[in-house]
Image (cartoon, rainbow, N blue to C red):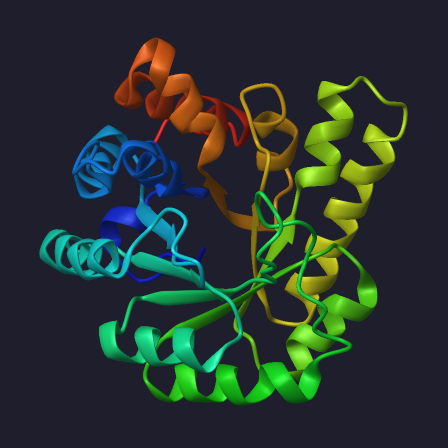
Length: 262
């Protein structure tokens, strides 16, 4: 969930878009076929305005496979674009990340029974477990992000443990908006406050989970956020409009929220 900061092409934009292509693999795996191909989706996403690609290799390999990670690493290196490897804090995933050396690795909580990643990583309560993985990844030149809730103790712990980036979990806010719940403004304010706290600590701030056309504007308008990572909604919308138009519309909404036409 962390894209290149120094690339001249990417730095033209105040807000970057990472596209998660996991659920292309979900559809492929439903039939045990070789298509649709996540690597082809990644190529289309980059051509449509994505700044980088995100993929989550789960322990049970429910969608992205080891072969997908190898192909995506080759593609993004060839295209000069960042690959963000979402991963659980396990020895197996650490070894895979070290073997492929993606631009970035985002450490996320993972449970076999969950449908998707639920909630943020408990960095404050798992310091001794998380710290060695962060150290190993950073030593290999991999930029490390932590997927966390917008809570003061978790943000402070992310800084203390040596992460370079945090990704704020936006799922609760996005769900509240979709369900027209009264707490949506409060949840958005918490995201804004967390982003400001993180920036003050020197952390780069990203955001993701559950973002759609309706919610992207308010999140993108938070000035400290440097990157949004969006996957499931874009893949679903692609069924109706096509992947390129879905990404281009999301990119336009992000740019409009920042007052940019880049």
